[in-house]
Length: 275
Image 1 (cartoon, rainbow, N blue to C red):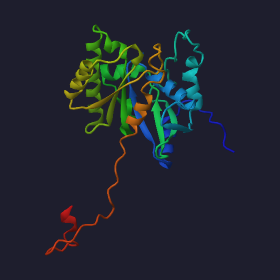
Image 2: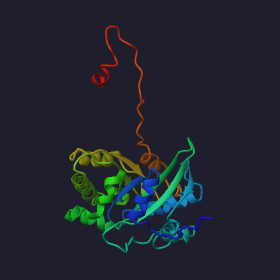
Image 3: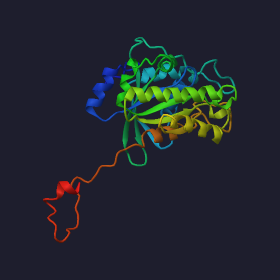
Image 4: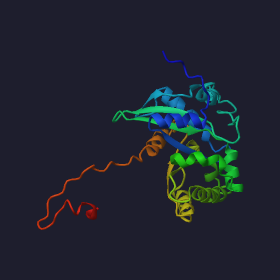
């Protein structure tokens, strides 16, 4: 009989061991303090644990206690009387390495199982990455297929704060390009607080243009981990975020493709030249 997982966040070594036994989708998650990174993770956990993440079912987690810790404030939320803080500020016991949350999900459409390794990082790490180019703590992202850049949607809606956020996104993209020294993982701009309003198309265009200055592209996914608007349900956009994150499957090429013979050629001898 297997024991109930006792761990909180998982150390990088635990993720490495998991990756040795099965395919794991490592996600990089960046964002300034109060952007909503931990809120996204807490809401995702609450959605999947209550069977409300459309298209996905829960299969396993090696970090249930960690999820319970970050979701505690939301569990105490009474309708119309939200707590002062939905999630606690992320603090790590080791300032040099990330702590990971783990989820295994099953996609209803085809039964595919997906293991997600999700780092819960303090926003100060992103602040220092932009300001001082400190990249030693982000070596794990070289194993990531997707990077979420979480942005406070309220700041993007504010005319006074908007340009500062957009400029920082460009600076962060530049740091990511330097970190990878080549092709970077897919980027997803996760704009939070969708319940406060829809992000105008013009602002989205400015974000994409700012990334374009670094020859970087991204997909924008608006989310509302929690909501104060009855028209926007808590967890809005998280299904799209997971679907976007897991959509990068590489199609397998045919192992030995067949071809119609061409008169006057010797296909076997030409096999390597044809390719």
